[in-house]
Length: 64
Image 1 (cartoon, one colour):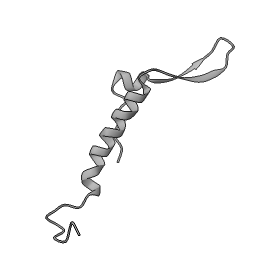
Image 2 (spheres, one colour; image 1 turned 135 degrees about the vertical axis):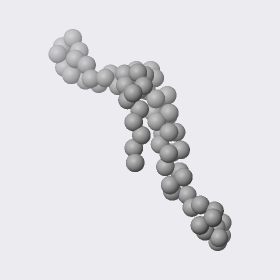
Image 3 (cartoon, helix red, strand yellow; image 1 turned 90 degrees about the horizontal axis):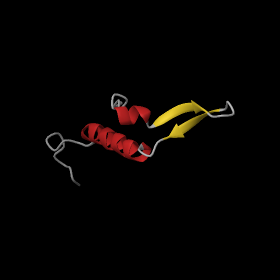
Image 4 (cartoon, one colour; image 1 turned 90 degrees about the vertical axis):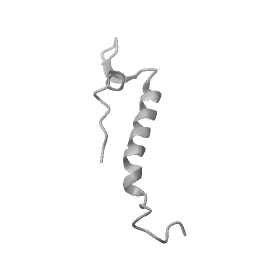
């Protein structure tokens, strides 16, 4: 399962591929890259956590 963050302008533009003055292609990171990565991690964990944790009704022996 994946979540897509590219629809957000800040997420889309925080990492870009650019050419410098000497013609070398490289990657530019914006100041927002850490905030965007943190938000993506939070969204992914909250999406996956319910799928990974056992439900209380299906397991009567949980917690041990």
